[in-house]
Image 1 (tube, rainbow over the protein chains, first blue to last red):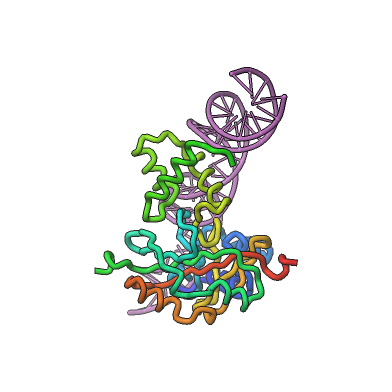
Image 2 (cartoon, rainbow over the protein chains, first blue to last red; image 1 turned 60 degrees about the vertical axis):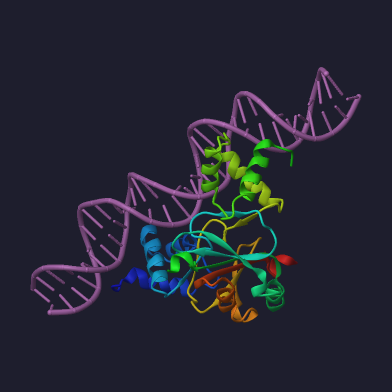
Length: 124
Length: 124
DNA sequence: CTAAACTTGATAACAATTCTCATTTTATCT
DNA sequence: AGATAAAATGAGAATTGTTATCAAGTTTAG
């Protein structure tokens, strides 16, 4: 990854933003600061920075939503390779929601908890 | 919510599907079973069923991705009202990834953990 | 200083999802 | 059962978020 002024600006702007912004929000901030960085460059760099582990992209299940008829509390695992979604029982972290609620003081109404990696089949 | 044959079909098809499908996947299944349900109807009903708590929509942060310069393990909270994203320390569930890995036998490479509800400000 | 590799901006293309609207179906009230 | 209001449908247009394309500009190693 070569140096680029645009990438540096993007990274700095992201660091100054407490509120984990979307690409669109960042784009607006950049424009207000008279940056001429194009939207394509912004997306490109965010992806690159994320791929290199310098920032983190938060987006649950990549592009599209998945639907689950099981509404009991439980978590999910999506295989990076075959893209199948598996269930994980909520037992792995009892009271997770309660604890998070106690720590933050927020009213937590629900959660999306998605692990990703390789499933047994794809790991061979 | 009134009864509708299409909604019943959609819900049944979802129930028969272990692999938490996307809307597109469901649409293909329905077509193979000679259903004439339109894509708009499918999306409409999935949203309605989710709004009524009958099924669950898994999608981390609704539409668009968010970016975070903090790459240490930690979780997120998004406020349903003001849409701000807050950090939650990973202390609320130490070894979460390890435990999930032990339970499933999968190789877990990462996670996206998003809680949602009302933040302090919006809860007043 | 040069060449190869990388990056950019502008815009077109794309995929997932929602909206619009005329028509049909369902529930409610005599 | 018949009338009517409310809700749901199908088809396709529209919207949104994101990625791809490509010619021109920039960075880096030798």
